[in-house]
Image (cartoon, rainbow, N blue to C red; front, side, top):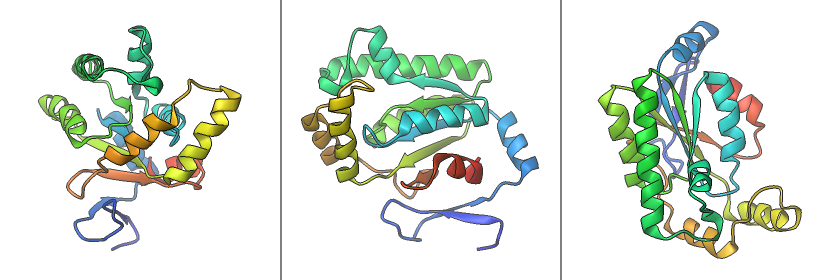
Length: 200
């Protein structure tokens, strides 16, 4: 691996099947910002996706597409449980909005858990219509840390509550990105600003 390359590892941490990407210089970053791109945030609730997503929007001049916002528009809150058919309606709406944004030539940051492979594949299928690359931004945090954050939020109420039952079920069924997906991985406690600067 050269000094201008960095490995994106599969979730298991193995180098097998890893994707090599160029470590970007200033000129390369400007070129990348000029390209239409889709960034899929991926991780458990309270992993820090929204915070990282806002910074990624600022860094890449992308548009934020939040499924929490779509649910709120529909009078729904995922943290206390939403029927599967309602989640599918929200997902289909997100796909339609993504298509509309890509048709305008805009980059998009999709803020959701993207907890199943088929969800990510659906977004990739939309992006493929415009030959737009998709990168999964995977926030891989330990469940204990995420649970600690939810319990602190139960007291502070800085954001809508996510029940521990919902979170544990999400963790149980979560499908981490595979080695065949284009992935960049964020791990706590690296400062978000430093991570953004390094990758974008």
